[in-house]
Amino acid sequence: MYRDIFKEEHNILRESLKRFVENEIVPHVDQWEEEGSIPKSLFKKMGEMGYLGIRHPVEYGGSGGDIFMTLVLAEEIARCRSAGVMAAVTMHTDMASPHLARKGNEEQKQKYLPRIISGEIRCGIAVTEPDAGSDVAGIKTTARRDGDSYILNGSKTFITNGYNAEILFVAAKTSPEAGHRGISIFIVEKDTHGFSAKKLEKMGWLASDTAELTFEDCRIPRENRLGDEDRGFYYIMNNFQDERLVISAICVSHAQQAMDDTIAYAQARQTFGKSLSQHQAIRHKLADIAIQIEAGRQLVYHAARMYAWGLDWAKEISICKAFCAEMINRVAYDCLQIHGGFGYMKEYPIERMYRDVRVWSIGGGATEVMKNDIAKRLNI
Ligand SMILES: Cc1cc2nc3c(=O)[nH]c(=O)nc-3n(C[C@H](O)[C@H](O)[C@H](O)COP(=O)(O)OP(=O)(O)OC[C@H]3O[C@@H](n4cnc5c(N)ncnc54)[C@H](O)[C@@H]3O)c2cc1C
Image 1 (spheres, rainbow, N blue to C red):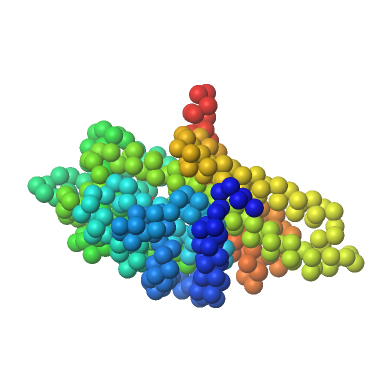
Image 2 (cartoon, rainbow, N blue to C red):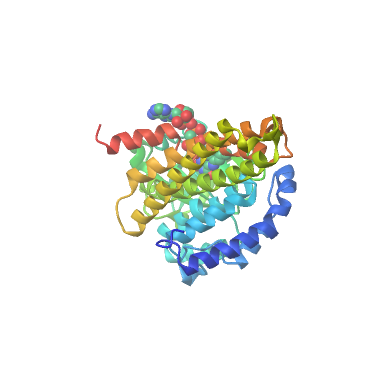
């Protein structure tokens, strides 16, 4: 299927990832969910397999792959039965490190990118603050110039990989009076004096660390600023497009897995003298689920094709993210319902899935924000 976009090289990557997820991740996820963290060795193993630099340039150790390679990674890693593991990995590969690959200068890329791709260091992107999430322009963290350095002060919250990552790309106001035109991005190393991180307790994504970060007079060398001063808002918005495609692909993959599990359950479970899957109400529910998943998949592949063809895909990406994030929540709800009481038990994967996917209509651009963007692009 989809032979126009997935060629032999994509299929080879998919097969390799499937084996890796099955053998190296799935057997451990219950333990990692319980412990609330993922061993660094997983990143190293993924680095050795070449999974952490799929689209990064070859000269830094990446594979220089296309956007469809990214889709393969997103779809397969999403099947590892822990969205926490998936979040930690895709944050590293597709949400944080592209900032460096796109806007880093040669020295910065030489210094960090090979180690990110090999899994020696982990990374994250820190934009959200206690008082500013959807409204990125409203961030309050400041970076004041002081000779050859910037002095960073402020706090961030909900930052994926924020506790364990060795480096973070941090958004801060360099021209506080200039609103969205006054934001810059800085590479902040974990051991910077004045930086601290605290893990947050949450509903799902238990294996991934989500942290609150504090910056108290952190001295950041000028050479750690990514790209131009005051252009950070545009860099963030630009990277959001890729991030939202990856999130949408993950939502579709999660939904497919939930449906596969639910069909197997409904076929095995007997009620009123026949299997659950033979009751028409359940059959229709499963058919509705299949329709929604296919619609989501087509939106994802359509947006990815537009990107590959060099077309403006901004509206399509917002449509895709809004649809897929809501779709997976509906699918998880219906799949759990079909499982009955067993769906509420930790023994069944749908229980974790239901908790894990709730965040998708909030993170990476909430549904309401996506709809605002779609309306803007409809010129209404
Ligand atoms: C598990 C998790 C991991 C995350 N990881 C990261 C990360 O690694 N890095 C990072 O920077 N951030 C991260 N985030 C933050 C995430 O991107 C924000 O939560 C998200 O952008 C929403 O911001 P907020 O939570 O401040 O909600 P708010 O912006 O306060 O919005 C609250 C609600 O109001 C709605 N709303 C807001 N404005 C409008 C409007 N104009 N019209 C209508 N409705 C509106 C929103 O859609 C939302 O439903 C993460 C969040 C979670 C939960």
